[in-house]
Length: 578
View 1 (cartoon, rainbow, N blue to C red):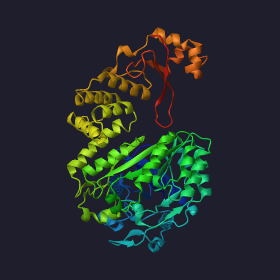
View 2: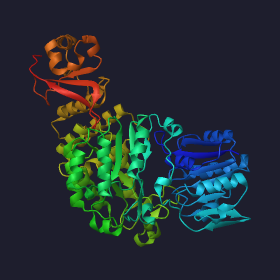
View 3: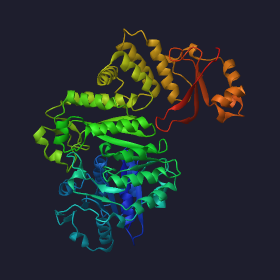
């Protein structure tokens, strides 16, 4: 009999760590296969690929992004392989096991909580035809025509006893993908919207285990290792030790953490200050600055300390900072969310995520939904539709703002242009600028279809001309758009809508500079000894006379990007008679 472990990820670059932990937990059984798909794959293709494996046992890892697909495919699999045992586990089935099985007759077992201790017992029983699984806690199964649920929620007490999943088989699948890593499980906090608050305490892998795993992963030179700890720095001294270890490594891998910035002390800030540029990324959940909301959701946050620490981290300039907001929280109406947005936006992080409250199964906020008049989707991801404080119309507007914000701010490609529009037309209200931009995009149909980067340039240029008709600085704005384009696109093919011949240097002037050894030594030493025609493939010259003095030329070097901003380097070349 064959066992198939299936992960269905939200994107190709993601991996499903859970199924690899299950794979590592099973000893003494051969013929176990892991398959990963994405929600963008055709369901027929997923079905046919699973069927070709001819499994006798299938285990699916279930999350809010894939539960619909999992249940649909399970139904079809049973038609083709009626004797196959289908096992579900994961966050989206751990809190309503009986209901899942009652409503989906094709599912044979549901495991609640962590599976490393329980899953091997169940699989071995199914291979041997025994039924020891009936004594396990946190498992739902069928008996005759009824569903039996042994109450409980499985948690592994000693994490170091869990076998490491980072074997050769897993690591070969992570090429050009994110590698997920956990140094702990659980969370010491009790935010009412988070399922980590449904069980108490936090458990840690030992430092020896963490370092051993990281060394093993780095053998494969991944681009990004993302720690999935709910609050990485809840244990301050342990977090410091891990960060010290990571910044001491001789590698080019980036490490991403979810952290509580108000828990950073001066020592941690000093450690972060020493990190190689781009080595560390921090995702910090602010969620809201409304103190009444924070109290209601049991989120313990010192906004003033958090803000101060975020400013300090950003000022260092070596760390990519990602801040989060959540719309739809209790006591936060549209105007309150606007205040939270402007407050966080003014910190100018590299990324700001506008998220929407999800009423997750098992969360306290879902159980208390009537208190605040919550209406939310019955289907995953269970996002809020409206509540006592915010309407669905307002949620839809924020959805449009989220999309435009992703295209323009979070893309990192329009920084100078957005700052110029804001200073010229929206002096004290950043939120209003993105609200107007969202309305403009909705009105013109730009949110109803995918839009290319170059079309987004044209849209923003047209938006500025439309919204700031009294402005006398259209030409300056255009030059800022050229600056943004050349800072993020190495093609040198400036879009027609912002291209002007006056910006260009003559081929003769360019070749003259690139043949000048003194010029190369000063501005492009890495190209010393390289023929001018080959240098020209990696550099670009432009004149932007409203942004720089008339005798200065901006030189872009496309051989490398800034490790934090992702922008190409440029330098102002002075004293050139053109």
